[in-house]
Length: 348
Image (cartoon, rainbow, N blue to C red; front, side, top):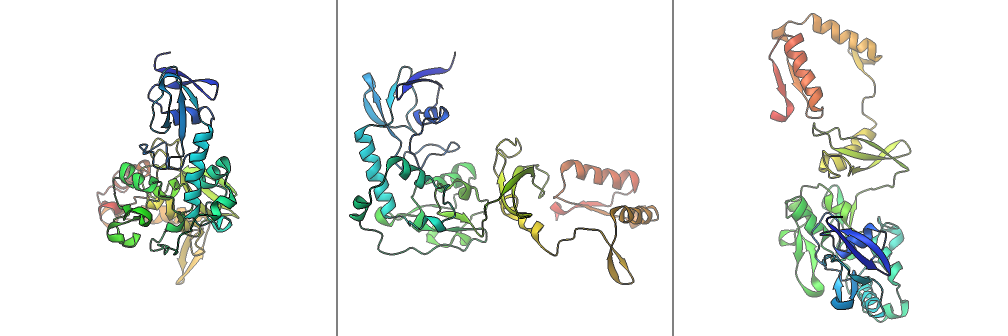
């Protein structure tokens, strides 16, 4: 087959697409290679050094699998004594500088660091020889939607690359150097003072608990739907728990957004839970708003519209409606109410 590469990983013959990296080829066939800084939507950087593999035969050498493209006839080992020792040292250095209060972390059971540590194995006696961080770094909770805890950050750079490659915002970057390296905005100011747009794309890609949504709860089930905030039609999954919306995530199969969301789609769902939200039509009678059924409310609207002249009527369409709904609104205004008194909230 054109564009197909045949190789062997851990004595298993597999076929990969031309242009794939060794890591991508292995993961596509269910072969786990430890990694922290890899994300399929971002350019590989090889920062964590955990995805080392050994290429045997004529190419014999140890390489970073996330940056090495597959070649025809490659024979690869993902586990050797030398590679395992290297991974264990890398993990020990990360854990020594990392908060280990996993049970109270928002990423508990979903943390990539836990997954790698479980695979590589961590020796408590060896960890005890390493000097932990002397001081606890302050948590940046300035953003209204998410917190950044540098004590849990593993400096994988996924958030930095997401902000640069996917969002083109460049709100954050690596600051300082050596043991003092951290992720920060310009001038190490709080995140709220940066040009961050609060899209949350960095939060959903963070492999550990460094970036977490404020007040996040795990849903009991999720419902596939369409975002209500504009006419783009972004697909998302709303998480539900005890008849309350508790989360929102992008639908990767949606052609409108490919899984990405803006600040409104990702964090703007909580108005649904507001106890003051109207759930039934209200009609003003004797100075008081009285609940009525939908049929009665629509009859009242139709009656009043029928008695209203073109120069007495105007419509303001909404960006929260779909494009199709907005088309119907302008058609109704012009064809039924016979007026061009029409505007849209987005213009204002």
